[in-house]
Image (cartoon, rainbow, N blue to C red; front, side):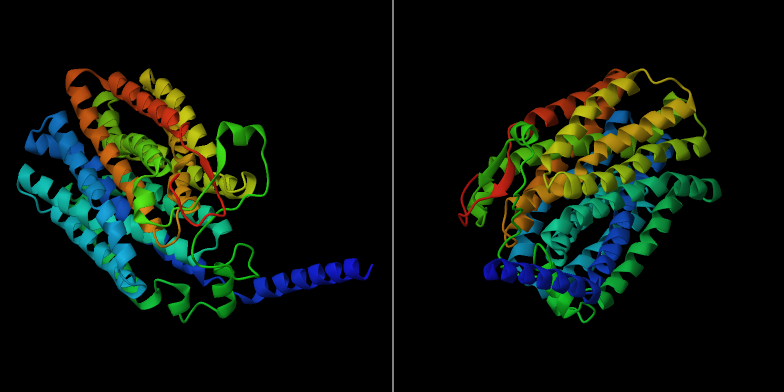
Length: 466
């Protein structure tokens, strides 16, 4: 009886401590996420504005769909190539140095965005697109690295979902804003307008945010302890970001192949992990679909459907309005309802995308129907996006996580870079029906690849291949 009473008292004291800690710890980590959100939205707007300017640039330079696709893809090729080097850079350098690199890359991104408006030839246009990709490439790894350091495990998917929502918010606001700029000035001024905010936000970041909570004067001791633990009371070792799952979802765990796996803690283990590579290939398929939406849909709406610039601006925003909601809801479902399982929504997103592309093949010219279909397609494509960034957190230790995410992002971006070029070639040879069929096939390949990787639960071993 005395032992039972003691256990009850300990639980009662623990609950009281949790309430007190929750009240006192503060929430500066969400301020950091807010800045990441705005910075990433601006960065993604910088890459998306080319899609709105593309019909006007094609007319001015007299370029084919294939060459236009190459110009679009050059950004993603450059962006993808720097992912692994950037991941190694974040692993090798100190937190203090990497904290300063983040705003530097943001400034360079803004500079190359502005230069896009000064082009006098197709060659310079291609050169600046490569520069933009190289400059923006390390930003994504920087964002996930900061989230990994600033949030406890049970908040990471929600935080990542919010961050990825910013990647869709940029393209969401781009079409309408760009149409206004074009109507007032012209297509070149689009790039000047989008270059300014990134520089201002970089300065704000330098004076406000540090790379770790321990270095921040705005983060309380209670919040730092909460960040370093799964439940908010006991500080766990900072060696890793394992996602331990005590609950069992029965048939779902069988479908997604939930397995205990040793944690990846060395570069050799990361580079030889099929789970990491498989997630990267699947990510590349879905990134390709998003890239086509971002870069080619405005041209489709103007040249095929015959919509005016104003109507095109609203309809081109539809898939990204759906994407914003998809990222938010997907992150919450993954964290709250699925016990931090990432694969279910990744697989469901790929499966649903197949049918949405079939719906777009024979989409009518009715703007309401087309707008709703694009909205729903964006929602379904993006519902599982957060899982790709969080998935390696369940496999790798914090020290090698930047590299594991770098592999996923690098392979994903290089794979996704092929899609706009492929779309341009298909348009020159066939029609938009072929493009939408290609996108549906990409989603099918993604689904099949995801079936071969596991849903990880970290085992007791410190490291090994998976």
